[in-house]
Length: 408
Picture 1 (tube, one colour):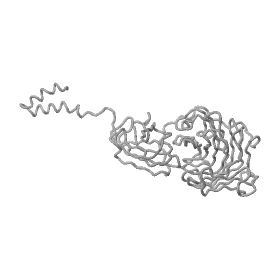
Picture 2: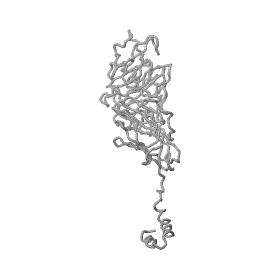
Picture 3: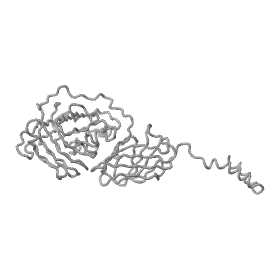
Picture 4: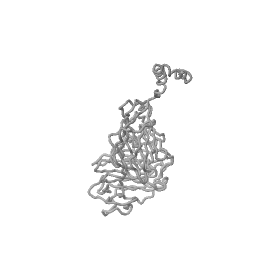
C-alpha cells in the first residue's frame, strides 16, 4: 500500500479511531517487519587453535552458526600482530592489513542453526603472533564465545577436508637402476675418513643462525656401512642449531642436483617445524632450502618466505610421509635448478606430496609454486634445527651429491 492511500484513513481517525487504526497497522506492519530472503546470521562461536614456530604458524578454526540457517558465510577477524596469511584450506582467505576474511567454498557454505564447519590457514609473522579477536559471521559479532589455544600448542584433530584432486601428471618413478655408489658425485662420504669425535677435514661444525645445546659428533658405534656415521643430538628451542657443513661448493652441480643419504633417528617428527637438512640457496640470497618435518610428516621449507611443500593443510600433510624411527632409511632428492621441478623418495618410494611438476595443486604445492625462481643450492648442511618443540638424535651415513641420479 502506498502512503497516499493510507492518508485518507488517518484523516478519519477522529470519528472512528480504533477500527481505522487497526486497519492501518495491519497494512503497514508487514512492510516494516519484513526480513531479507537470504539467510542472516545472528552470531556464532569460534575455536581458534594456533600452532606457532619462529616466523610462522598454522591455525585451525572451528566455527559454529548460532543464528538462522545460511547458504554461504564469511568469518572475519582482526590480527593484533604482524601476521600474514600465505595459504588456506577449506576456505578462501583474503587479508587487508590486519583485517582477515575467510569465505566459504561451494561445498561448505550451508550451515544450519547449530551446525559447524572447520577450515585452516598458514602464515608468517616477524615480531608478534597473538591470537586474533573480534570475530564476526556474515557481519554479526560472534556472541557465542571465542576459544583460543595459545601459540605453540600442537593442532587439534585436522578438520574434515574436501575431496582433493591429486596432481594430474603421473607420479615420477625413481630413475631406472641408478648406481648405488658415488661415481661422479662431488660429495661421497661415509665419514670413514674421520679420525676423531669432532667433524674435521671435509666436514666442519657450524650453527648457521644461533647456537644452543645441540651437538654434532662422529659416532663409531652406529653406522649404516663401515664403522662410522655422523651423529646429531638435536635439541628443542629456536636457537638450538647444530650442523655439520660440507666444504664442497655445489654451485656447479646441475642442472638437476641429486642428493642421497641414509638417515636414522629416534623420535617421531613433531607437530612443530624442524629441519635436518639445510642448503644455502643462491636464488634466495643465501637463505636456506630446508628439508625436515612438521605435523608428523616430511616437508620442504623455503626460508625466504616460509613456504612449505606440501602445504600444511590436512590434504597436503596426508600426501607426505612420516620418517620411520629406529632404523636406517634411504632418502633421495632431486632439485631442478632450471625449472620448478623436484622429487623426494623414501626407501625408493616417491613421496607424492613432495613431488613438483610445475602445475599448482590446491592445498599441496600452490604456495610453493608462488615463487617462479628455481632454487640453486650452494652447500650442504646436515644437522638439526627446531622452531619450538622437538628433541631428536639423528645419524647420517653414506651421503652423496651429484649431477646424476644416485641409488640407495
